[in-house]
Length: 253
Image (cartoon, rainbow, N blue to C red; front, side, top):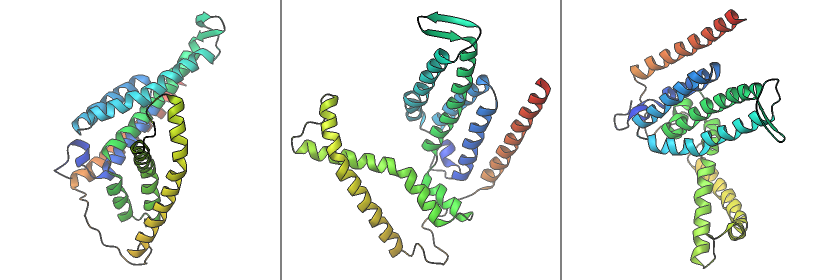
C-alpha cells in the first residue's frame, strides 16, 4: 500500500481491479435500486481517493448522458400492451419503461465502474503487477499502449492545432471552420503516431525487451497483507452475490 496516495489509489492496483470488477458484476446482477447504491458508493470512493470532482464531471458528461438517451429511445420505441403516454407516433408503454430501466441500470453500473477504474488505477503499475503474475510482457505492452493511445493522440492533436494557430489559421470559430482546420491535421497526426510507434519499438528492443531473461524493475509494487485480505473478501462478496442471485431466481421461478 502506497502511503503517499489517498483512498483506493494507495491500494495495490490489482486489488483496485478486483474491486472494480466486483462492483460492475454486482450492479448487473441486481435491479436498479442496488445499482444506485453501488454508484453512490463509487462516488464516495472517488471522493475519498481525491478524484471525486473529476470523476463526477466525467460521469455526468458520459454515463448519465448515455443513460438518458437510451432511456428515451427505449421508452418511445419498444412496444407494449399498457400505454402510459402517447403523442402522435410516439407511445410510451410500461414494458418499454421497464426494459429501459434495466438497460440503463446496467450501463450506469458497468460504465461508472469503468470510469472509476480509469481514475484510480495506475495502468503502468497494474501492467507491472500482471507481468509479475505471469502475463506476457508483450501482452502487457499491448494493453498499456491501447489504454494510452487516445490520450497520446489527443495531446498530439492539440499540439498540431496550436501550431496552426501560431501560423494564423483559425481553429476556434464555428463548426465549419473547425472542420476545415481539423481534417488537414489528421494526416500529420497519423504519420506522427506511426513514427512514434516505430520509435517506441526500437527503444524497447534497445533495452532488451524481447530478451529471454529475467527483467529488473525500477520500482517494486508492494502487495501487503491488507491488499491480499481485501481481495479475498471481494472474491467472497462476488461468490455470495452470484449465489444469492441464483437462489433468488429459483425462488421466484
